[in-house]
Amino acid sequence: MKHLSILLIIISTLFLTLQHQAANVDYEVSMSEPHTHYFEVKMIIKNHEGNEVDIYMPTWAPGSYLIREFAKSVEGVSAKQNAKELNIEKINKNTWRIASNNKSEIVVSYKVYAYEMSVRTSFLDASHGYFNGTSIFMAYQPAQKENSKVTIHPYKDWKKVSTALPKAKGEKGFVYVAENYDILVDAPFEIGNHVTFDFTAAGVLHHVAMYGEGNYNIDTLKKDMTKVVEACTNVFGENPNKEYTFIIHNLTRGSGGLEHLSSTTLQVNRWTYSGSAYKGFLSLVAHEYFHLWNVKRIRPIELGPFDYSNENYTSLLWVMEGFTSYYDELLLYRAGIYTEEEILSKFSSSINSIENQPGNKVQPVAHASFDAWIKAYRPTENSYNTTISYYTKGSVVANMFDLMIIKNTKGKKSLDDVMKLLYNKYYKQESRGFTSEEMKKTLEEVSGLNLDDFYTKYINGTETFDYPTLFSYVGFQVEPLTENSLSLGVSLSGNNIRTVFRNSAAYDGGLNVNDEILAIDNYRFSDNYDEITEDKKEGDMLDILISRDNIIQTIKIPMKPRTIIRYYIFKAESATDEMKKLHEKWLMQL
Image (tube, rainbow, N blue to C red; front, side):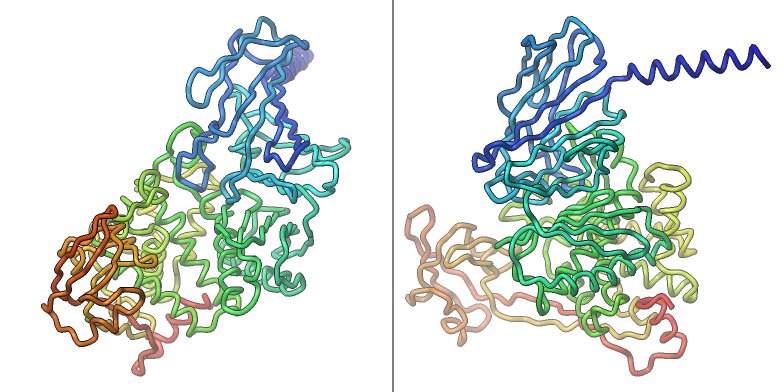
């Protein structure tokens, strides 16, 4: 036993020594002249490996599937070791190589221009600072699994810092710690003199940082956000966070939200806190909060560990974003915020949106997920004709799965059980993401259905769901009404064509995006299209005077109807008791 004890001491000492020698990186962020929009960053690299140290700036922000090239905003990169300047050169678009002759710590200094106000990027001006880590913190790959310390030096007049990272024990000022690089860049920072308040919901302490003036009422927000948090938590039966942070920017124009492990950033119009707009805000709260499970913990295997320099492709964004979009509406009904009429209107609106978009018959929802990097965030004037949103289409798919599961299990299970199984099996038990095939198997396990045909038709294909049959399971009728109206088939910005709808009169007749419509049938065109064409019949010719690249020309186009199908969902008068029971399971999970 004595020899064993000595061996254990040696092994323990060796482990602690190796652990102590592991490379790690600390950071300091300053903002001495916020009106210039520059964050000043120091990156302190300790116990680095070799004589060449490569550091890189990420190219994208997880949760927003677009290469944003954050290195474009970096300037003035320099490195010192023992106060001596080191040679540093850029070796590719986002990587710098530092020459070092010894193991002493290296201090890298650089500036980041931050003047893009979105939830995915960073912003600094005289009123506040906000940043996402992937656009601020360079990375040193050998240290990415090690902890980091982050020190924030706010501008002299600013007193508050809000972030989900815990404060470093025993440190004065704004010093925070992150377990690893993934955690570091997954916790945005708000810095300034913003309003803050707290509330507790589902046993979790929630911090709220409110930047900007707005018509919000703190007591109302506490009450309603508590309802949303608890409705989300009830799906899974537990909340994995002890604390959670909302950063909310009240602006003239919002950009939505972005999810993080223990926080979110929401950007909304400053006057959004009343009427129907307020319910839209609560839906956004529900969407991003639901992501703390679905995306941040329940995830495709491709989404973590992240490759921060390249695209991370997955065909499952219809689950990650689409299912979340379904729940962000459904949970507001469960929370008592939406009426039944309102939730049915939301569901029918999603159906009508996809079924009347030409791209829905071109791009399967799985393909929309995979191609998000090159299509979803880079829309063109023809995207409406060739693509579909994995958010909206995915929410409709989730709705159909929910109805099918409830029907086939006779109300014993629902889509909630799919989410719980994914959470418990792949996140809690196996600590990993799941494959596309495992997602399908999970749906089959809960529903008791073979989904081969469903996937062929609706996930990897573009067929139309049998809405009347699926909604009849829960005692509702779906009535598709076809509307035919004579139309050019364009969307306009002023007199300029922004979109030409596929197979429309304009599409067949040769009108182009960016054409300016000057006159129709010798009448000056403004917003009087209906008046000019009210007496026209199908096949009648329109003389359309346009300016194309400042060249005036006339195009003759025959009038053609545009077909719109609108689906209306309402309670069936002949609903059976069994249908009513399944209806309650669907909406209220009784």
